Structure formats: C-alpha cells, structure tokens
Amino acid sequence: MITGTGITKTYRQRGGVLPGREVTALRGVDFAVEKGGAVSFIGESGCGKTTLGRIIAGLETHDSGEIVIDGVAMSSLKPRRREPYFRRIQLIHQDPYSALNPARTVYQTLEAPLVLRARQTGRPRSWVDERAAELLTLVGLEPGYALPRYPHQLSGGMRQRVVIARALTVDPEMLVADEAVSMIDVSLRLGILALLKDLRERLGTSVVFITHDVATARYIGADGELYVIYRGQVVERGSVETIISDPVHPYTQSLLSAIPVLHGLERPGEQPVVPTEALNESRPDGGCLFARRCPFRTGRCESERPVLGHVGGTPQAHACHHPERRSVVAMPLGVGEGHV
Image: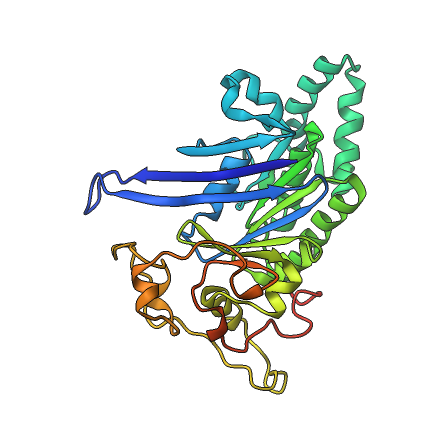
C-alpha cells in the first residue's frame, strides 16, 4: 500500500515572458492506493496529475508532504535505500513512440532488466529468454514475431504492449499508467485497457490510471476510487460510480458535460455545466481555484478556499461551498463499458 499526505510541488519558470515565475503543480494532495486496487486521477491538461504520477513512481521529488510505502516513510530513508521500494512501482509512459530506444530490438529492451534480475536472484541465463517470451505472451504479443523486431517495425498498439511488458520485467506491485492510450489509435485503445484490467485481476497488480477521459477511468477501475484534480488540488474524491452518477463539484460536472451524447440518449432534465471563462493561471488564488470559471459562484467562493470534505452529507468528499447548487449531469449510460 502507498499513501501520500500533503504532497506539494512548485516549479520555477525558466526563460519565457516571465522568467523566475513560480508555477504550483500540486497543492497539498492526499491519496491512498490499496494493494491490488485501482485509483484514477482525472483532470484537464496542466492540472498536475502527471506530476503526481511521477512522484508516486519515484521519478520526481516533492517539495513537502510524505510518501509512505508499506508503512515506511520515504523521507526517513536515504535515496539509495528508497530504490527497492520505488522499483516495485513502474511507470507506463504516455508516448510509446519515444518510450522505446529505436536502436534496440524488443529482445534487447527486455533483456537488460531481466539479466540484472537473474543475477540478483541467482537464476540461469536461459531464464532471461524464457521470461522475455513469457512476458510478451502475457501482454498479447507473439514472441517469435516481436522479439527480433525494432520499435519502428511495430504498430502503435504493439509498442505500447512492449512498454507494458518492460514494466513487468521487475515484477512490480503497482503500475502507474500515464495517459496510456491517448496516443494510440481509437480502434486499439480498448485492447490496451482490457490488458491493464486483466493484469490487475490476474496478477493482483495495483493500477494508478492518469487520464483526462472519465470513460477510461471507469473501465479500468469501476470498483476503485476517483480523484478529480484542478490546478493541483483534489476537488472531489470518492468511488468511481458515485462521482460519475452524482458529481458534486462544478469542475467535475463540466468534465462530464464535455462527453458527447447521441441525440435521443439524453437524460431527462440534464443540463450541461460550462465554465464561464477560459483558464487563467495568472489570477490570484485567494478563494476557490475554480471560482472565476464557476457558473454557481458566490462572494464566499471568491474569498474563502473550500476544504476537501463531506459537506452537505455527500458520500464523496468535495471542495465546494455550495454542493446544493449543482446541476443535473451524469455520464451517459453505457459510456465506459466498452465505448471508449
């Protein structure tokens, strides 16, 4: 199990129009991922979800807060002693085209980590070849076809499967999938999502799914938790089905409103929630971060920052002063159940 408490991250802009300007990526984020569980982080581009995923995978440091893995606080360990913990968490990159070395065959890509693992565990060299073929079979590729080929000789879907196979070479307990299907042809997306879902069910591997697509989050972990992130703050947190069927925060409602619905499938009384203006990062952060874009805002929203909690007796936690002012909006029936 991995938990995070009060995770913050700030970047300083280099060059550009405003050199030295600080950009806050994460604002005191709390999260928890159970062993074998599924957690999805959703939000628009630039909300901080990828930064959070890299922090979870140990590829990025955070400014403050604490990461705890199996009861051990990472801040109490030196960097070298953290490596075994973060090795159990592997990142599946968004872009399968740049994630693989074009000068290495698929076999060479899988061989390097497997040879190291064979040395550590005292296994014979023959195990490396057997395991490489086994991993490719596990992710739905034919070893005889894929192993001798270079990345450019494979389709986008095949390359993403190789990336997943490489992540599995160290027998991870958790996979962090960062927009794992966003750069793949639509016709191949369901296959990759089904693979991740199958790995979770068969191997007991935890999955952290980072996406802007609510439907894919629902498909991967319908029984898991959903974290909605806006400008580095978790604005809504709860079970996937609860949030999708009855979203509280206006930002969550706007994300669901953006899903196209075929004429005739609209729900009675459903009204879309559309932000009143474009995102402007230069505005002061005195009140609710979404206040200037929220169609339900009041004076309190612009002066007081809401805290994540169960205000109004809602089953999910949310950061909104007026949960009663929400519109009637929910994900269309059937979306996320194959229509991805």
